[in-house]
Image 1 (cartoon, rainbow, N blue to C red):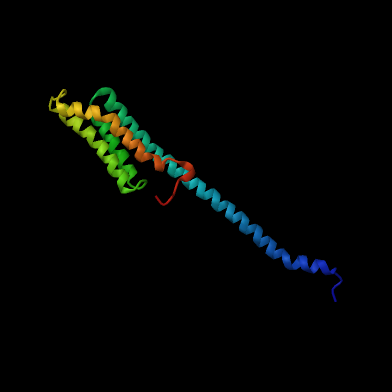
Image 2 (cartoon, rainbow, N blue to C red):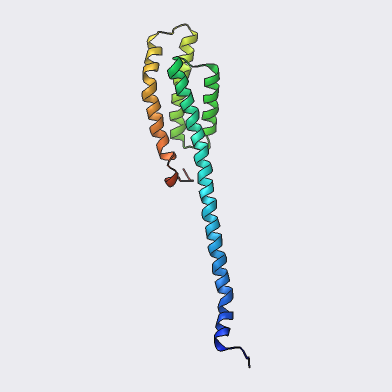
Length: 148
């Protein structure tokens, strides 16, 4: 017969279970940290897409045209969005980019004051606001869904 007190046998029996519970709790906490880190990285990458679109808008709005460099950067921005946003959003971003293509094309033809150039320049603020509205669901960190 064992000389250990009766209650010590219960502690010995529960010890492994308590350790397993503690390990499970630590694993759950680590999972939460990893999930938050993934959301933060996704948020940062999407924010870069927003910044690229904003820079594109600022140049077109300030200069009234679109340079090759700005169009190239916007094309890179759109390409970077391929794996970060759903198709509907990318189409909106591509439509915004096409405004720059229109401006560049008409300006190269020497039609700086043409009706189409003025139409695009007047539409820029509204189109950029539409793009911002399209960005909103993807830029809320607290509700960021890794599956979107």
